[in-house]
Image 1 (cartoon, rainbow, N blue to C red):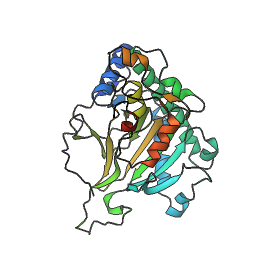
Image 2: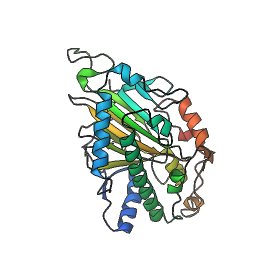
Image 3: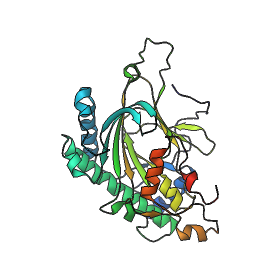
Image 4: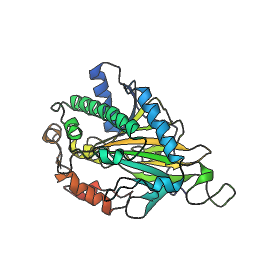
Length: 320
């Protein structure tokens, strides 16, 4: 059941929609502004082939339609990327969701699945989109080219693709049914959190559920648009910009009679990459350094030790 009394505002209120086909400098300025004000935006005319998108979606639908025992078998030894349902993380978080996790540099894992070809094509397409958005971001901030994109372009980058399937309200994993009047039909599919990586590129089918938290702490429902990608700032990008960009808190709710499918590419750096505020982000605005320098590996270890809604970045602030 959905907890809390935070207000929900109008659908898409103040959510930027950025047309990637505009003049380059205009796009870069719009991206920077969106990252500063909300940490979330949509992109259209993004250049990702619709055939690649449709194939990925259909293969995902086919997989989640399989019997549970077949889906559970997708779990390679000593590899945390797998099929799962309800459990989110290692510390008791759960939701009305089943999912597939892929490490983008793990071809051995992908080869075990019938949908491996669709996944590989999709990963390459959204990775290119993520690199382009990060290069435009660097241009807008007037930092050296590829400052951000080089971190996800490395052969040992620690990026992940996650496919989430949120069932309709009459098929909740928790066992509630439409006849159970004591149970709310609106449930948390994926609880409130920020993404720990650099940038997330997400697409969903035509079913609503995603909500983002604005600067007033109110929830903004995001309208589903299968032709667009949603982009949100991750924790590492907030650190590298010394707090200028916002790692947006968001959640996914489940309701209604249709299932929701979302596919998220989490663009991460190599495990040993050192992450800290860029010097130009400190000097340019004459602002104190807000975060310590740490490795992505250290940050991941902390992430796995906390609950989903915990504020991880507070642990790395220079002044707590």
